[in-house]
Length: 225
Image 1 (cartoon, one colour):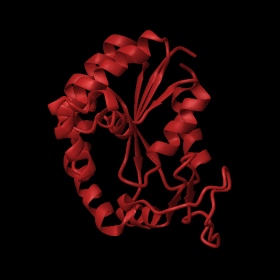
Image 2 (cartoon, helix red, strand yellow):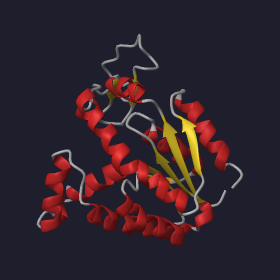
Image 3 (spheres, rainbow, N blue to C red):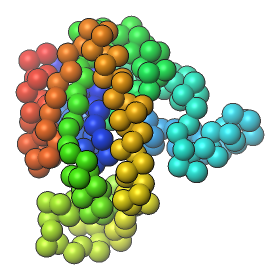
Image 4 (cartoon, helix red, strand yellow):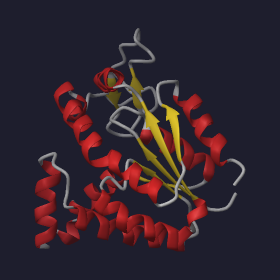
């Protein structure tokens, strides 16, 4: 299989990160989590004196979206580096805005070729998003996610993978999830229209089934590449 780009969209709780990890392992690609990447950038000890880093760190730590121009500039640099290493790349939820899409899609097309880029929309109802996010436990060490929606009788306190104590993220409170849903509808959904107008076919996938079933449906669209 040649090196490809997979772009996954969907509301909070749709399973973008889970699917990106599964696909990255199966395809031998890099899961590029823009949020985690930006977090590493603004907390880079060697850049703390930069004014722009100080500004973006404040935005990040307040839970607000970082400046699109800053995010785009940093992400495009990484796209070029990953492509130069001859690695495929999986995006989970980004480019998030039209501004970012207008600059990152051309960079991806130049690095990988348009025919090697696949765009998916993982779709779940708003009430499912609230229920799944509200019942999600996370391991701070290995990143393991326990979805109570699939295991309602399990009352786990410890990560079954590494034994660390599980916790609930502040991002998964009902109030925060509702705000993230609004942001997704207002700022991210238009990116799908942008991609469609640019000539991409959007593959719509039901995000409610178990992760392995969702991954199988996604892979079915790209396995013959």
